[in-house]
Image 1 (cartoon, rainbow, N blue to C red):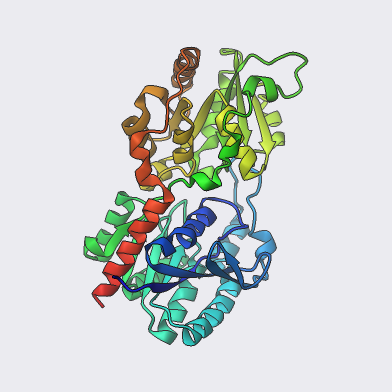
Image 2: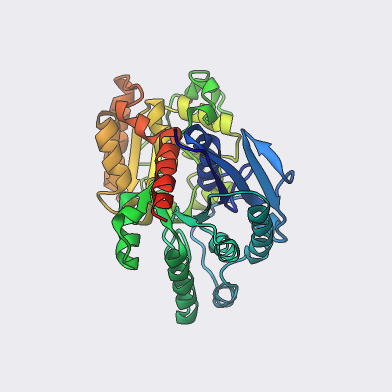
Length: 423
């Protein structure tokens, strides 16, 4: 029988913070103990310090800038960053979480000296998490494993404007990867790139993808609402238009601007459809574009309500930017697939990871178009309308079980044991 191990998991993002990063790390804390790896989470202080969450001990470290970093802002179009703002951002190295990282490093060092840990697992971004883990590793000699949810440089990580700032980031990345006993990444493509760029044996870089957790999806709402009846949004009568929902955070790197510009241009050419954005889309932005009669936004909702929206919509909308399409998978993709609803996938670059997975698991209920292609969007809408009219709603795809967060935690536990066995 394998002995139980204990890991100090360092992550700035953790519930009650929202988003894919917090959900990923919470799933590690929840499921790793099932595979003989006990977890203590070191994160940002949000509610209580030193609590127990589903069996994992969670220790919060105060963050002076936490109020500005804890939630997602509204999406109101592509941001234009001024020269002074870019200069200030480059000067704050590695990022705005530095004060928290210093406190986390001190607390982590004390924990490691007081308790017996087998490894530190640090998840990127932000870079300050890696800095904190690196400091703990150097002071205690505990092996460090790095989990990459994004590339260090690029839309998911950092985009410094000065050569000096870029070199500082690259230097920290090289230093941390050299010090790490093992690496994990969210896709094969990302793992391949990290191994090649840093001259690592590919076996040292594992793949632990994102996924779904049925226990957290609000499935108690399954079938509880009919989209046209309940979500008529103030219409006098029953709204008979097709409801296509985008559920989740609207982020710039998935190029929602291209989608909204297409909707604005085809406005009037295609009726019978409502796009409902469940999350952080700005109402003012929608009104500014002049499409508020076909695009609605709910604002931020509970996880349960988000799950109900996924179940009640006629179809679901997935926006796949070039960055995500190359290096990972959209966070909501797996939950979308579980609903059995038709899915419209709009990709910035053809052949995205999202499209390949949808074609593999549920090709019969998906339509595709390129972001910014007005005619392609119209054709995709026509296809989805036919699918809905034909009653297309499938079950959970058989191959989706591999993306259960418990299965991914098992892969992580195995990688941790493999890495440490060679030390």
